[in-house]
Length: 86
Ligand SMILES: [Zn+2]
Image (cartoon, rainbow, N blue to C red; front, side):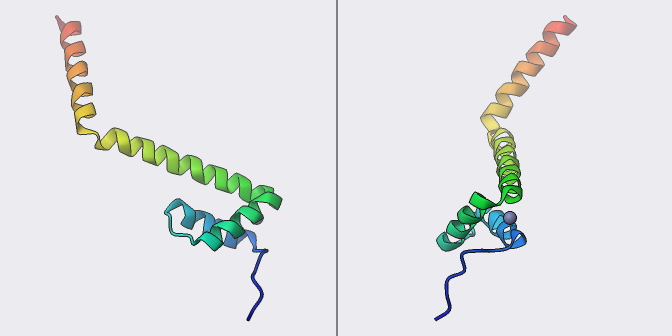
């Protein structure tokens, strides 16, 4: 049986980080990634940027997908335009 690999290279860590964003990483991969992030500053930064990006996309999707919210915004906008033009 081969030994478990605790230390991974940065590109591997980044790959796992990407997979984590899509809930595609195994528990073991997440553990190794966490260990890597403890001692690797570059990957911590990468991971943080990645999380921010995912968060931003998730937020914009909520805005785009909520039809009722969109309709309400449109109504408000139409009302505002009407008030300005009157
Ligand atoms: Zn690294």
